Length: 305
Image (cartoon, helix red, strand yellow):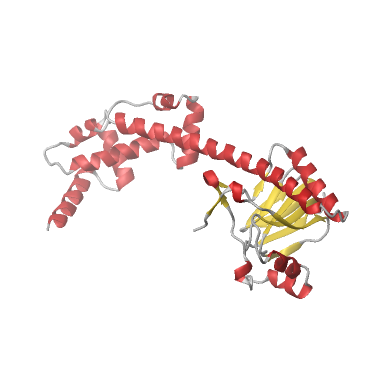
């Protein structure tokens, strides 16, 4: 399990900074540290974890350690990307990785099935509050991002003796932009989960009553059309399907009581029509009510024995 990285413990080390124009690789590569890449013109193609992305101006790519990835440039609109390699903390072997990357015989081994020196592989950080680094994103503040990358590249290539300080300042600004966006997405996801749970809780409390989608969605305070669409996106099923499945699950608990007729059970779980209840149950469970009752009772007997 990855230990949480506290923001106050950050001590970034910028290993090297560059500009990617032509060099590309279609054979999967793995790296020991993190590489940040920012596209400021044209287009490039990045494959991370077998997921393909077309990267255009404003896109930020963060390549994690030991993750296979590919990079090549668009033929119609060849892209240009600023990049830098870094560590989030200060490691004793920080210079070893730089030397490794700049030795041709060593560098070529990163295109193999796995990295040779596992003791030098960095961890992908998980920050306080559950914030993590998005691998491909397009933050809103692209002008500030471009300025930070440009400043980092200019001071590095100029031979400025204080380039590491300037690079660290730019790194903190980039990281703040990235984590603020991540926090916003985390909050949005939390709000979505809360709305879904509200709808599910309402169904659990009122499943035996006549229900409408609009009635259930109203508890979220969201537009009914948006809420129902959100439910489907997040759960993979329509709200009416969820209601039907929930009612049938409740019906299965009641069917083990032989004193209750099928009509009684249907009414108790919110079906006003016995035939419709039988149709839905047959579709979801593959059995008629009587056969399902017999099956459930046999399972109950077996459990008691």
